[in-house]
Image (cartoon, rainbow, N blue to C red; front, side):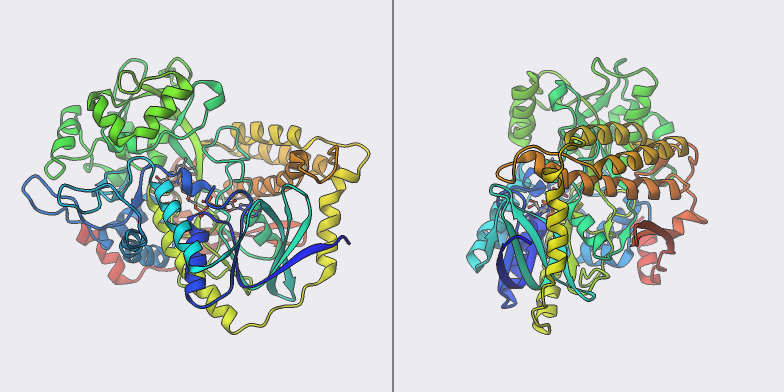
Length: 605
Ligand SMILES: Cc1cc2nc3c(=O)[nH]c(=O)nc-3n(C[C@H](O)[C@H](O)[C@H](O)COP(=O)(O)OP(=O)(O)OC[C@H]3O[C@@H](n4cnc5c(N)ncnc54)[C@H](O)[C@@H]3O)c2cc1C
């Protein structure tokens, strides 16, 4: 076994996005010694890339008659459950909808500078699936402001940060998690972070798909470390295909075009110029009658939101993504295989003020001036609704000492996430996870580290460098991406998923014999070798769960089971866990919603 650096904390947070930073603040404020470790630089996470806004029912927006929009936690609760096609954990949604406004106002107290209404309140914009204007925002750079604010606060309260460290294995003492092993990305030197409680806040895992809005960090490390340590995973088949990713130029394919464009009035057209979202075939029964039937009404909504219904471009993401897919399949696609998203009617000054990043993104990367011409867009892998199963109140996983919050955890979004609900998820449950981890640490002793676990992981990490020859991890990654894109993307079938599984198993065998040149010093190939094994296992779990769920619901669209099966599958979550070397998948009944919450669906209508 090779030497390693050792650090010791009460609470260790893995990940420095919004969930990790909010957890760190909470644990520190509870009096703990807190360490934060991240694969990249502090604050360089998906959170910083978030554009459209953070959803919380502040009810700040005014109608033309001077009244306030009738938003409340209850409406937010109903919208989130409907958006998630009722697969959500209702208790998690209830906590979320009730606490999101306090957490956003707290960000303001920490120093976040949001856009303002004329009365000086935080400005809220409309987004898909939200009945009222609810996305508190800073132009289209909301995530940047949130990260800046949380980072300042976290550093102010006093945390210790380990940057550019990849964690690869949770260390256990009997059943309990007592720390993590990682390596410095620059030197390859090993590091062990011991802790009485660990919070996983490692974000999502889009990188096993070819076209994704996710950054290089999204390889499922935290998810798989938890799975390996015995945690249960929930509804892993549910992966969000955001309707609008860039399609051109090719190097930019998959990069996000914020839903804020549609929130600000952007419209979708096919190559014939048709506003295809008005096609009644694309309207799910659950939303019938709630959206504008004509382009005229949709246009009036921009000025008078109280007396007009929203345009159908603001249906939930799964609905819009499927419609775009079907238009392109029907031969109505744009020049580069997408559809057109047009916001030019809002005028150059408005677009540059409200959507500055989109203006720059298209101008700099695609040579397109979005104030004068439409964008080309197509669905891109964006978000993972599935993840680690946690307790609603405490974010505790099924493994003692291990907590999870943010995108890596599951339960809030069900089968489909509403835009804006992730930024509020990470601050609501980041805080709860930090507090619960601190409470756990207060009654726990530092656990003994078992060196055999460290040695095992070091041997595993070293094997691609010590082998004389073998597979290239980049080749395997590329083949995995092609496979997942082709067979496990937006439209799924049993035949396609079985083909995907067969290919994943072939790649897993090949990945047992990787080879990477050089040594551990600043070696991206070596990093890729660990990442690919996490990605292969994550992909296997996704595909197995997608095969198991024999219905279409939210993001899971099965061409061979086109209906939502409310009598059977709609009452079940899928739990995946590790049984020796096998992925065990179990369908478990959803918990019955209490009467007072059921009543909200009538009340809100
Ligand atoms: C382009 C884009 C735009 C978005 N816009 C919005 C929006 O407008 N509104 C909204 O609500 N949501 C939006 N989202 C989604 C939202 O940003 C994310 O879901 C959310 O920020 C996730 O936060 P997190 O803290 O859970 O994880 P992240 O912010 O992804 O942070 C993960 C952290 O874990 C670390 N990490 C990962 N693996 C390891 C490892 N092995 N070892 C150590 N550290 C590790 C990373 O380095 C990082 O620090 C957007 C996402 C993208 C990609």
